Amino acid sequence: MRDTDGAVLGNWILSTALCLALAAPCPVPALPWVLAALLSLSGFVWLGRAITQAGPPADAPHPTAWDAALLSFAASFGVQSAARLGLFGG
Picture 1 (tube, helix red, strand yellow):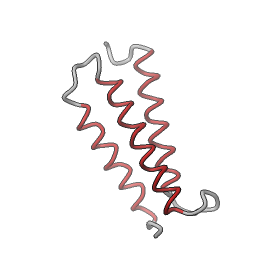
Picture 2: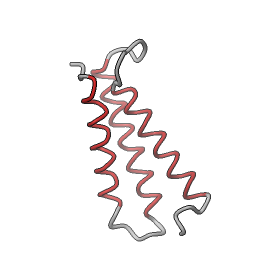
Picture 3: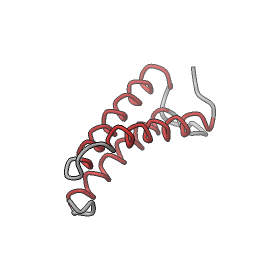
Picture 4: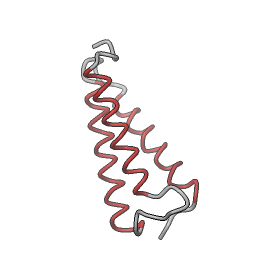
């Protein structure tokens, strides 16, 4: 079953918001690492969905589960990079 144009992007935003909500209670020094781990886990879930349901990744006119997996992994990498650069103040 393929999702409609805005459904995947909306669901990705919701999954990212859930990652943020789960990481928020963590102590400040651990927060970026917990958030990055949760975003990576989210990326693997999206990747599993893409492999089992989304079809081929190329030539889709709208965002697919493949794109959501890539966004999750990119967000995780961004959080890790920001933490290494000391942008979280920890």
